Image 1 (tube, rainbow, N blue to C red):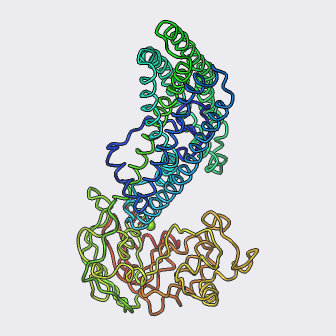
Image 2: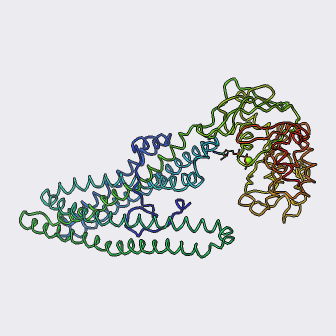
Image 3: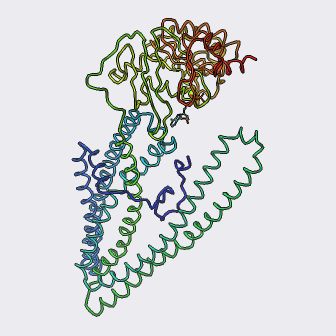
Length: 601
Ligand SMILES: Nc1ncnc2c1ncn2[C@@H]1O[C@H](COP(=O)(O)OP(=O)(O)OP(=O)(O)O)[C@@H](O)[C@H]1O
Ligand SMILES: [Mg+2]
């Protein structure tokens, strides 16, 4: 997830604060901007006040500079000390007014920005929670994470200061031009010739260094990604003695980063002072030409001083605009990606006539069900399964046959393309999704544990369960004995997806989670695959207990656990090739017989 790593890499003065140099552009900046604007909501009045304050600040700064003219002409040259003190008081008042306006404006803007970001973040998270699993199959975690980190961060920066800075720069620039023209049109022309030239030179230097910095960022990203992968996969690296190769690969990336970073830093280190010097030259040139005009055309000294002040200020807003422009583009591009996720189609809402199910019996029927994760690749072909309430149906078959897929369809993690699934005779598309899912508990093949206590992790199955119920569920599912041996028992905090537990222990917790849910339908997908056979025999009792009076579907490679199933379904390449109970299938001497004898010979 190299893209989520932010580093302070850029030297002061270069565009792309926080090393986020980006040449990306939003597809439709105006539309994105409009959409952000809708998020301002009731804060539009605040925005209005902010713009007013911006105007006050700009006017104060500009008129402060202009007052140099009367100060010099009327008071300094004629040696009028009292008048000068008065003037200084006026200037002071002006600057204080400007500063206060700017302070209030910044404060208000940050509040507005953070409220807006808060709203966008909430909406984004809500949308992600409502998206179908299909969406997550085609978007990596890293990619989604970077919407929440990088993209929101960029947008937040731009809203906090970027937008008002651009606005204020535009105002200042217009004001300065106006004032310069007012003081001396001729000198303004001189400045307008010199300054753009300087800006052009500076722009070229900055652009060039941007390329170098982008290269540096790219190399850094590659290195980061590599380091992360090697740290995560350290066990695999060690097992396959890959250390030497890893070091070699790292060296290549490291050298590349060194070269590019040296280039970027050298360039900015050497060229930045050049830009500074250019400014000084500009100032000297304007002053010299101004001096000549003053002598020949009779421009007053105060006017010249004020003019020079303005011409010095001229470059700043231009630089500011060009810097902020890049950040703003990056922010808008990020915002566009955020909005793209918000526009993803959520899980289909329940049909208006959807039934709400309070207590279900547990009759399940798959009728001629076909399904593929993508239309081009059908995974299941015309599957029909009947389970009477309370029956135990086992699904066996080789890896990739489609066992997990069948079970993904019952809680409607994915919607089927052909056929129907019924629960208690009602087509599941006509059942409220929440009710449907509440009546089914799934013990997944790959489980997830949240960063929280053991107690809370089990309670996830049914949030209103009491502590006592949690403990009974753990006892029933055989998890109790190992939980008691944890440092803090049920209050032990599990971290990073239960990394501090063994695979089998994680499975036990998951079975406990399903136990506490008290579902009408139970799905166990390789629920005991990582549990040792002795413990399995012990908890098998618990599981049998759990399955009593419930319709259950059991997927297992270890066939000993499915012998007592009412029906065993053998799946191959998405099709049912054999079905029947254990004895029947053994007599059939088909696929099941082969699998079974392979395990017990
Ligand atoms: N989320 C997904 N997106 C696309 N294809 C998938 C997805 N999950 C599974 N598949 C494909 O569907 C097929 C069936 O996978 P499934 O997980 O149902 O197999 P399985 O029988 O449970 O195997 P195993 O015994 O290894 O758990 C496989 O070919 C797999 O590549
Ligand atoms: Mg599976």
